[in-house]
Image 1 (cartoon, helix red, strand yellow):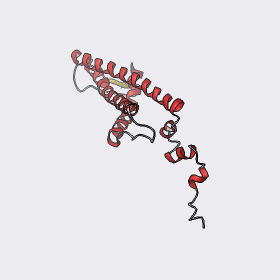
Image 2 (cartoon, helix red, strand yellow):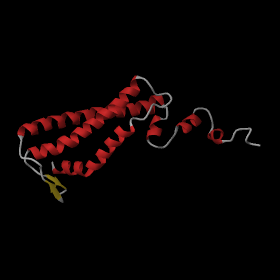
Image 3 (cartoon, one colour):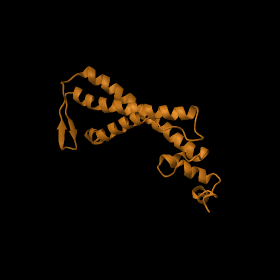
Image 4 (tube, rainbow, N blue to C red):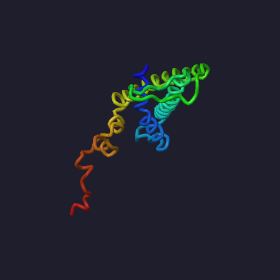
Length: 159
């Protein structure tokens, strides 16, 4: 159990930054050939995963503290609880934590299915774009225009 909480506490700030960043920045818009029902499913799947992570970041420490325990981080230090033992609070937080873990697992499977769909069937450059190794311009170049013609100057500018 201490390994689980040590890893979670170590990643705590980064996870919160990721959640805040996505909700402030918003979900990226669809690529040229991406729209409709599957795009909406993907977008709300991402948001469901983020909300579940958010709730787990709250319910995890609350579970430990509601047992009257401290959070031990790598045996380096402990984070004492702000309140005493409350088994009813523990039960509520445990239920939330378990359900959120299921949402994350199911959402991750759906997400991986979407990645596979884009890579194997659509071949629309979405996987490359999201991996940070491509752009819409690269996609146009692969769809019938050479990279040279995509970057060359217009004939009237060629002199």
